[in-house]
Image 1: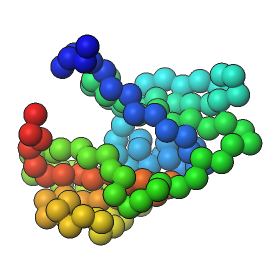
Image 2: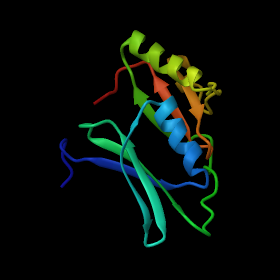
Image 3: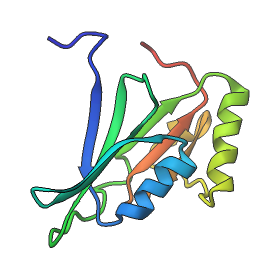
Image 4: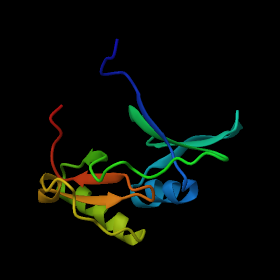
Length: 132
């Protein structure tokens, strides 16, 4: 049964491994929690924050094409309710060389900034409180 103590891993392949790792570490601010090389033909990295109940995993397999995001509305949303913390996150993205893009759904532009990763998936830094 899934509970509030359950850890969530969001995993997906990428054709732009090094660029994706840079986007999520230097831009978003996640850290490398672990990695693996040539595990049955796959390389991978887990990114997150120590102690957080979630992390992202990106993988690549030689000879396999992962492709781009299927739509502009495939999102990861990080809720940052404190205005100063949110602004620091936006500033960090800019300092890493990432510019905000217009969100496909204008809702996300009202209180947030949206960024496209090297695979076309989008990350929203939302200056709001999550419903949970």
